Image (cartoon, rainbow, N blue to C red; front, side, top):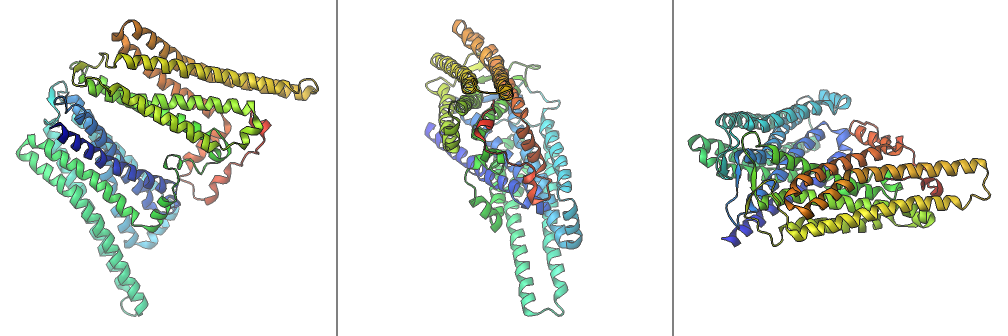
Length: 582
């Protein structure tokens, strides 16, 4: 039985991860490609893929929570926890479905009235999609909240028991029927209008025009049929079976809900496959070198600053910390008004794993960033001859490996079947000692390296002090003050929001492990504030603010030369060495 569960769990994660990573390059390509500026449907496609992406993430998380304890015992949750697990999935399905009908309508309008469509597209390619994004987002959030309204969330249930209230099932049935009918109607009208427009040439067309017309009709029909087959097979039928099954027996909802959930993932895969049938999208995807950095690869900052890659690593870790903290807090506080939340120990550990991953990765990136800044003052000439991408890749690889290892450590040789209250200690003693050592070593190294930044900046400035004139002396003093001020600001944020909470936590758990959860929450929120502080310090830089403004405005930008708004700074080692990144 345990082997069978292990096989199922492995297949489940592979099943969710393939479309998850398949959507990332396509989504990035759609955002960075000229298609976003030249096609009104590109914005709608991005919305649909975003919904598909959220579905895969939600399914991956649900599967993790469901399967983690199966070898040791049946997993169970309060009804509120089950609903919260289902919320991201519901939100993803709604977003994906809301964007599918307007995408069909957009294609229909392109064939129904091409001239008016091109005029509207030329004037406002983003406005229509923005309306759909807003409507889809609001409806998705409202739908995800509905199961929580006036529902007893304190009942302890097995994860396969029905959790959705009857009125929500009725709403979901109506929503599924209406959206599915609109999608089918829109795409059938696409075929109708394509043949109608082509038919106007039949009186006096030559053979070449006739062949083009026939080829065009076949291409449109083939594409529409591909879309409809994927939609009906992987969304329409599972949705219909689910809605019919729950009418006769509510207890069948979980089983057929799982079928609908997997159908949503396959529908997401089908959407990606259909997109990749387009030659321009395939060419863009093939040209991707590093998927993680592709969103910022066009920025001048990434090419002109050695620390840009490390900043991306630090922000990635901070982002993961914030997401995991938000999820942990949601799971912790959903049930207190009606009952105490509790989990198996394995579920608690899995909740904490993304947090560990983000913390370790962010701290290693922070240390590497401090070393990078120190090197700019220790040896400016050697620093600018250095291959920064290769160095950053070593740091980020080491940080990623250590982060994954740290996140996996609490699961090793630990009894995950024990049912505990959410505030009980869940970590083994040896892991607390490891975390204590990691916190002390990394924090000490960060403090030491940033203090060396001040020392090396003053040492380099002092070498010209004997023969410098008044103006050069003023520049040297100003430079020293700026470096010191920036370093102090960075260290203040680091010590206040990471160092102190970490020291307090590690000191407390030495004397009483039961206090670990309370002070761990303090450390957790300190990390979020530290992440906010890092972003605030970054945004104090004028070039960074300009890059952010450019990034926010690029989706609406109509001119290809929009990236020339920021002139590249001269590569002057002496002047550029004054920059201190957090």
